Image (cartoon, rainbow, N blue to C red):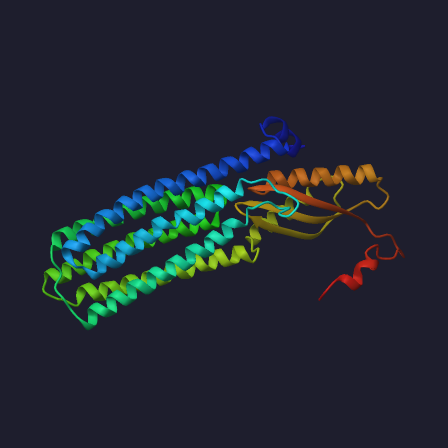
Length: 326
């Protein structure tokens, strides 16, 4: 009764056209986040590059390169969001949402490249120390980099979590680390002002370590998504919702998978073995309906109804046993 009252009082629709509109809106929000981030980080990196040329700071050079790379990650994500808008067809029957996973891999590779570059420049400066010029300008550039990256990080993470995009969240975490590395540049500038020439390259190495940490987190998130990992809490939530549906006697195998920033489900439920086909189908529809309400960003569920076993009855799936692998 509570479920039915909620259904009546809450404006919603399960029409396929409305689902498509929601998906397009999610992609549109992702695109806005990308282009706004690209503009902010582009201006930040350009301002820092001017100071790099004037100062010769290797720490700021690494931070600038990292900010520029972070801005450029908008390109693969933008392509992925555009592809995700394309309708499914007979070749890509699930659509093009998995392009976001490929974009996530591209982002991980970009972070890796920026870490290698930051390490190389820092080691080179350790072997060949040179004084840093224009230290006040370096300090201001570091603060600009920190502010720009933190704003972009919060924006990307908020939008990425709202639309369920692991790639966009990973990109936001990347930007957040850039903000901390910008503050490290400030520390290096202070050390150089005190006459310690090795402060700048040592900070460059610290930036490399920070990039490596965010690389670990981003890679873990993206590769989990590539391997169809989901939060176990979502599975528990889906099972609880299914068990509240009238007519569902049990819940069998339940699978969830991400396709881009949307979820799909496959589940087997147990119904009364004497139920008619129409009744079993109605229960399956109610089960799908419950899942759509219970699981955030779920767009479709394939529900299979199994009859409850009767005493002495043979397993109805016995003919499939030799197709099942261990």
